[in-house]
Amino acid sequence: MSLNLFWCFVILYLIANQYYVIAGIIFYIPTIIYIVTHYQQLLSRLKKWWKLLLSFGFLFFFARIYAEKSLSYIYDINPEYLNYSVSIYATLVALCIGVILIFLFYFIRYQIKSSWWGFLNFLTTKHREKTQSIEFCLAPFVMIGMFSIIFPLSYVADELRDYYIIADAYPISDCGEKHKDIVYIRKNNAECYSIKLTIPPVFNTIEIKK
Image 1: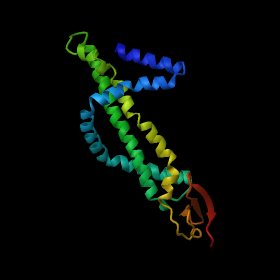
Image 2: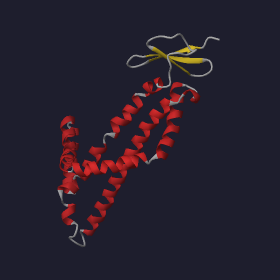
Image 3: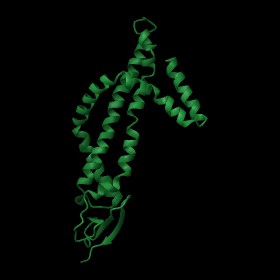
Image 4: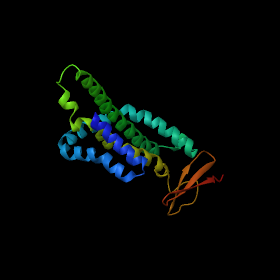
């Protein structure tokens, strides 16, 4: 544990002195070492994780409810006009939740094991060598480093919302005339979005001509 605390102190000290890049490099050193030395074990675990994620059908169900309500609220679009965009957004949300659950499973298990073995060290030396090993002490940094992918993934999931809506938009619609770089999606019975296919997409609200 002393190595664990020392590593935390070094990183916090560098952050406090605004050496963010160096702190980030030091933080990910245990993760890189672990990946290089345990890549075969990681490959076998990745197969299990993907099977676990694919079995999380209920996650996608709840994520789809969230995605539909969220996109409908943000873009003021009636839910019946949303389909593919909801599925795309829900997939990324479910993936984020799945990764978080896997991380919590391993992290909580490590904390319980660490606390229990630490307690047993007062009674026996059976686990002392394991708890004092570099690999065991730096395990939290390895887990956090490996699962930190969730942060950019969750950021991307939100930032790409405009592009999800395009999945439900069509170039031919009674909302407006056909253009090469414009697609349309209904907001409700009276309004539509015309979406100019640029980066990022440009949304304009237009009234439906009766």
